[in-house]
Length: 119
Image (cartoon, rainbow, N blue to C red):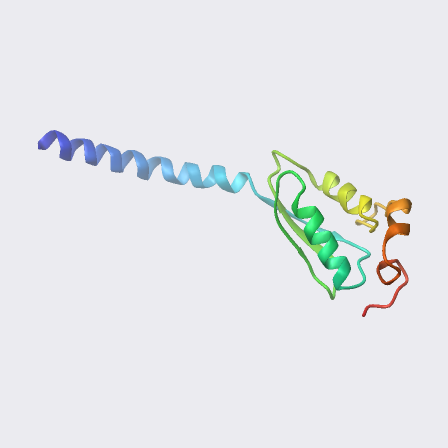
């Protein structure tokens, strides 16, 4: 019985010592980036959020309709902000200083193209 209590105590001690380290490791595997886009409407929001959520390493995507800034939570071991900007550009939208892919932009509905009024 004393051995079981001693082993339980050691186990609890080992977990309490290693838990903060595991929590710090987990935090290192998550970063956020904010990217200014040329999104115009709710369809743009849906298109960006849906497609970017399938990018490798992406954990969270949210586009603010008012500011047109997309906030992306990602695992830095699997992707990088520049890759995410490229992915947004390939959808037909500007991503910070990276211009939209012209062929992809031309395929967007008229309401989603640059210069369209929000609706």
